[in-house]
Length: 68
Image (cartoon, rainbow, N blue to C red; front, top):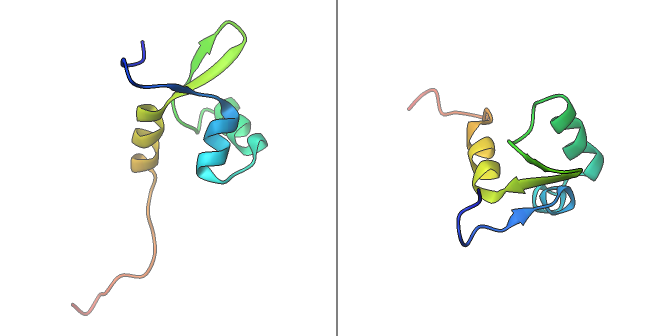
């Protein structure tokens, strides 16, 4: 269960936090590519801590200083 002070996020909350569409969040869930989620009856909810873990696990990119 969620920690005492940890609110459960809706799909819309997650989409808003990540600045992506609701469809993207749903697609990630259906493809099992997104953060862990909870099913409460027909409801889908996310723990903020699970969202943070998922974000940390994503690959990063960009230029690196190969001369230094």
